[in-house]
Amino acid sequence: MNSDMKNTTIPVNQHQIKMYVKMAACLIFMVFAYRIYSLSYLQISPVVVVLDDDGGKSPSPPPVVANFTFSGQIPANDTGADDELYEKWAARFGLYLLEVETRDCELPRFDPERFLDLMRKKSMAFIGDSISRNHVQSLLCILSQVEQPLEVYHDEEYRSRRWFFDSHKFTLSVIWSPFLTQAKIFEDNDGHASDAVRLHLDEPDLEWANELGNFDYVHIGAGQWFLKTAIYYENNTIVGSDHTVHALLRTTTPDHFENGEWNTGGYCNRTVPFKEGEIKLRDIDTIMRDVELGEMKVVGDMNTSRKGSTLKLFDTTYLSLLRPDGHPGPYRAFHPFDAKNSNSKVQNDCLHWCLPGPIDSWNDLLMSILLRG
Image (cartoon, rainbow, N blue to C red; front, side, top):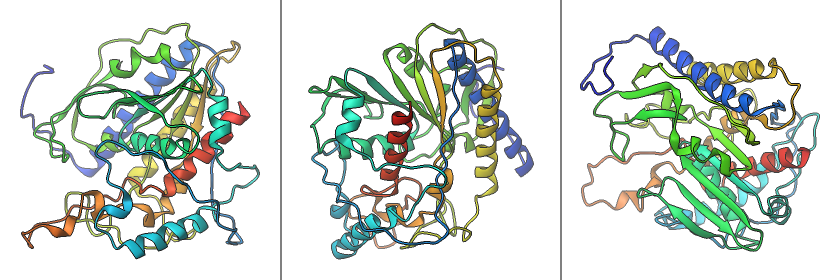
């Protein structure tokens, strides 16, 4: 099939969509697992966080004071949302965050000073979609309490960026690669596509593949983009290297759109977290997570006689599922309800997270994994 063909129409039913998603995700993670495995030894170490059964509340943690802002970033309390309501939400977030307890393990609070000491003279990259970017934003805000990072690189659209913490000689990067493999994407900044994605399953995206040798730690996440209409290609093979890298694979992140999707009027106006058992994963999220866990098991069954690189599971799916109250909603844009045209529709964001917000707790998991080696 010609990769340059245009205006291709692919009629599919629901069963076919699930099949294609599973096939694509399976192949993607198999390719990535093989690439990491070719580096040498793999160690699998899952971390799963769930709510404690007693539902007891712990004292609020110290407030997160960020000394860092992003280019084009709108402060959460300057979006047009009710300031008093936002402050109450932020205060409540501190309380709800510690309601999340671990079972059968100890999860330390994120310590930015200790983290930077651990990362001294090292480099870390978050590779994936906008959820990975969201996580980096959370991490930068917390680390800025210790040291102001210097942005040393960004691409034209500010999707791939790099910061340097001079006192610790630590480099933190985010690399935009929503499919992890080579892909031609035909859509505007609002996510409206003019054609199907051309996705090459066996060709890693060079945006990160060419940089892999520069990182000591990589955090990989993908999932939401596999729900887009795509044409799949598979022709080439992957070649390994001798570089040692410690990789984390983030599981799929569920959204909380209700009464519609992101482009059909869906919204998220809940103000408290779900309790365990009140919400279930959608079928498509279950399929994606099962594929991810399945591929991690495949990697774990490989020969582990050599020492070197590691691949660990960063499982945030159920932790994220319980937090419908932590999304920007209509405040993804600056003062969304101030438009002169009262009939204009406001698009909600029920996938990404407010800062401060639930995604900050992902850094606790990250810290725990780093401390455990």
